[in-house]
Amino acid sequence: MTLDDTLALLQDLIRIPSLSREEAACADFLEQYLQACGQTVNRCGNNLWCQAPGFDSSRPTLLLNSHIDTVTPASSWKRQPFEPSVENGRLYGLGSNDAGASVCCLVQTFLHLSQKPQSYNLILGLSCEEEITGTGGIERLMQVLPPIDLAIVGEPTGMRAAVAEKGLMVLDCTAHGQAGHAAHNTGDNAIYKAMKDIAWFQHTRLPRVSDLLGPVKMTVTVIQAGTRHNIIPDTCTFTVDVRVNELYRNEELCEYIKTQVDCEVKARSYRLSSSGIDLGHPVVERCRQLGLECYGSPTLSDQARMSCPSLKIGPGDSLRSHTADEYICLDELSRGLQLYASLLDGLKLK
Image 1 (cartoon, rainbow, N blue to C red):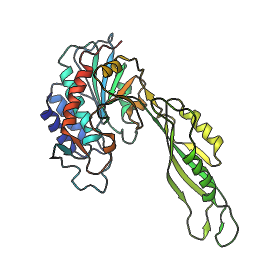
Image 2 (image 1 turned 90 degrees about the vertical axis):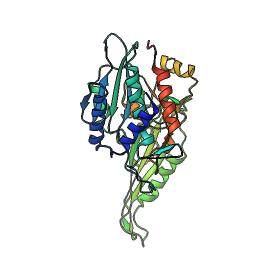
Image 3 (image 1 turned 30 degrees about the vertical axis):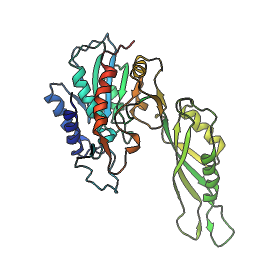
Image 4 (image 1 turned 45 degrees about the vertical axis):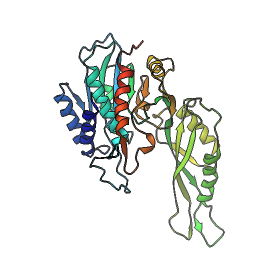
């Protein structure tokens, strides 16, 4: 389990475009890589998984998971996103930080831990469609895996331990008015009606504030209205990104919002709930022993679609995700390898 092996694997992954729902070539490569390392690889769609030797259903099972898909590269890239380059201790390339570094470190960790007796069963699961919260990714993978007692989810956290993360609920809102001629005092402007509700989303602070995740955050991100300059619009639609803490259920919060605004409100889904792990869990205790910071993450990951306890931790910085000229530091890769091994080798799951 060396930095050179991890770096070479990550460079190979960067060279293979792996946009969400277009991960087949990347999955093919990783399948062949793991097979060359002596692993029996299972595949469903573009998801891959393999088990360490000695699986025993009477023991708890630990899953190492990260995602192999990337977002579309931003137009402001100055480098070539699919051509890895190492400069001043940094590896540049699309997906290097989110989440290629985690993928490669977890692959190497799995290969390393598979050679040593552990008190748990170990599974490596590499999933697709994370960036679009697609149903063909982790949800499909979890259906074919044995029951999981703990999942380690690789995402760029700076190797801090995310013991909770906010959920996501996307609201599509519609304000209704009445069309009229802009030159006359007729009609009922839907934009003006929407502005009142948009202000409510902007300024409202919901009362339940989490110690780990803070308040619910509601942000209007898209707005559409009107067809011509001289027609008063009868419809104004806008989208609200709601980051939900563990003190609210998505359904409950949506119903409350409907009582506070005049527009029509529809949630796209309730399935991306806030997630977390008991702070007394053995893996959290091991994090504390290693001096790792435990925190609540504002960003969503595949944790939201896991029913088992999970911990999000990985090399890199979330602020670099989805940015132009994305990079991972080589010392972050090295630290990721070391800390994953220290965290998981000899871990006792109760």
